[in-house]
Image (cartoon, rainbow, N blue to C red):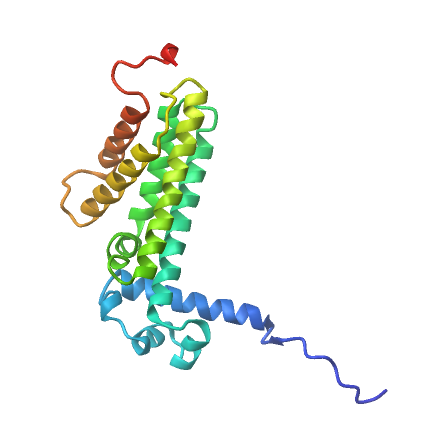
Length: 220
């Protein structure tokens, strides 16, 4: 029948509504990375300034987020996701290798990712601190995920006879605190050492935790 109406496809300019929404959200997150991770920082940024930096309107901001804290929360998770992906990729390159090679590959990849863009370090180790109880819970939950990562690798190494078989959760918690503190201080310029030296020190700390002095594999 002539003139029959077609069902709306939800596409505009060749993109679906979901694709347009994802693109807008990405632009707000990119702007947040620039402003929160550099100047003026999270506490000095307004919704209007973030929207302007994203090239979008404040109305569009409220279509994607409720508050600036929501943007910081999303960025914190995204930065950690990138770092975790890098660590897992590094680990995969040393698949089947002894624990020393696996630890070195994972931490070199992790450190290269988080230090490759200083804004990521600032968001992860500085801007997220003290914002709200909600973000503190998120920070601790994400740290717990890294602790689980270390514990899983330690348990696997113990099964292979490369590490002392024990509960590593407390030691892994202390180690993650050392990683965060050392990389924060390195980024801030308080550690006068190249990144490779920083990573080597972290790997030595990890191996010392897994294989303490006087322990031999045959001891089990």
